[in-house]
Image: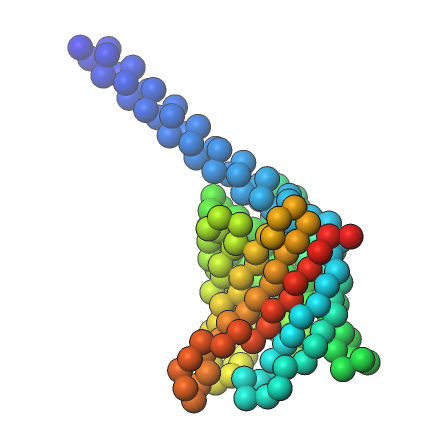
Length: 171
């Protein structure tokens, strides 16, 4: 009887470690699918109460196991070019990272992946639109598409507003 319980326990532990390992493999494969050179464009709201600015962007992203590094530039108003970057790391389906936006400063990212999207809570390096929090979504679209979106809360109305949406395609 004791031997049977021991065997069941070992089989259960083996199955659990196999499932945990496959979760890590899934995230490595997902991050690997975001690797490459990307180009595209979209709109950015510098402030919620201002008109959107059209931008064109180029990114290079490199995956290394459970980590992804994105470096790029976005241009708006024909002559203004800003560097932006993100360094992401997964621990299972949970993600952490650092985002450096066009104004500099290291903003903290934490979130998780659901389907083809990583949903992050952002803690801005300094106040943006009346507070230091927002959401960032990195979404894979098909084999060669990616969307980067930020959503913030309008301090006057309390409504959630898409403050940037950049649609990219792999080149």
